[in-house]
Length: 272
Image 1 (cartoon, helix red, strand yellow):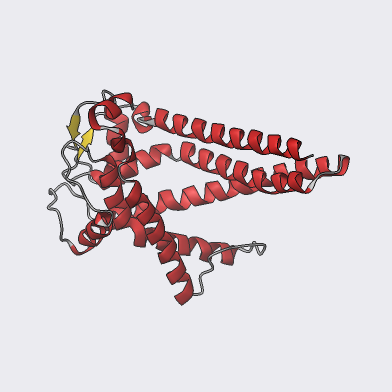
Image 2: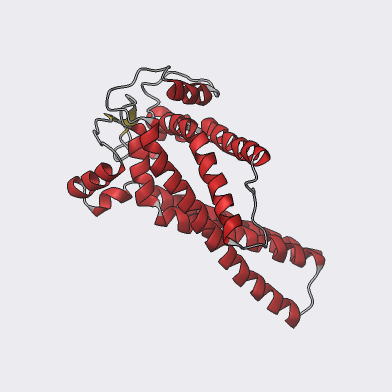
């Protein structure tokens, strides 16, 4: 990170942020449109029957398929080196995503995998991530709410304390759900990213050194071939390249949550 900041400036650490928001918007929009024109539910609240859960997961899978071309374009914009790429507009992600679907836009190599072969790994990762995070979130939230209820029975609480007890457990539950799902699915995410970037003529930064660029010369034939190749050539640790960045990310996330709680608790004590 220090080398990137020194050679390319602070902007290099934030590249692709705009396209990431666009992908989130496309995902939410696609989910809303599909749910409006189909009987597939956007949320499963208290009716935990298999049919509703299956329909809800189908909606999520269809949403991932619609957003996949834009996710691919956003991923390329995120990892593309600032040294060799032109200044692109914020809507370049939309343009590249549509171009990927209709076969126009920036010329790609013959090693580029067709979108049809990327559907299964993309949907698999998205569905598993959603399922794992939802389960972890509900379990953690249930445990925290039980502890909160027990503390409320033991002593009376002020309105501000009640507000802290109402919202902070949800933040902790979301944090734990996101952490667990990202850690568990990191090897699959590594495979997914390599499949999406292959054949796009992308030049990436050497994140080990911070001042070189590397071409993408992989020749994976699909998800299974990618997994076997990584296992044979790089070993098990090949699936965890870049995992240190995830540790730093969630360490900062946990620190921000803890600082927020300390500030709110301090304000709460001063108001009493």
